[in-house]
Length: 115
Image 1 (cartoon, one colour):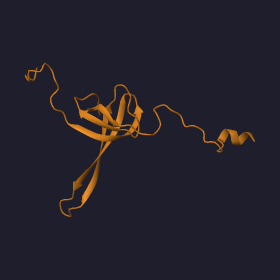
Image 2 (image 1 turned 180 degrees about the horizontal axis):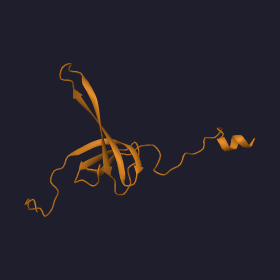
Image 3 (image 1 turned 60 degrees about the vertical axis):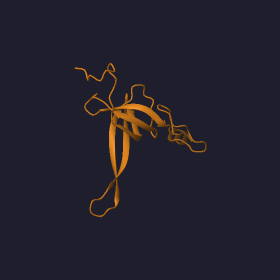
Image 4 (image 1 turned 90 degrees about the horizontal axis):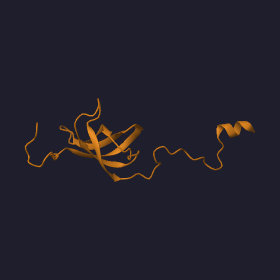
């Protein structure tokens, strides 16, 4: 069933969100947090609301702390309805799979027990 827009299968306008990656522990999936402000209808104060999206990351390029743009797509799994479009700003933190480096001057548990 075609849309009939004459562009040969081009995607129509899809909803996009910019948020921060808060988890990258799953394979080909990241969790993105979006924070938006909502005005309280009685008191007029602005409240911060958070929404978490499960996002498909095919190439596994996003890592924790990255600011990314995601777009809505067809259901890919029970929770995933979003796809990673681009990384807006990369984080300065660790790279995926990188281990904690030992800190000079601080002994680990195994080294301390040998003495």
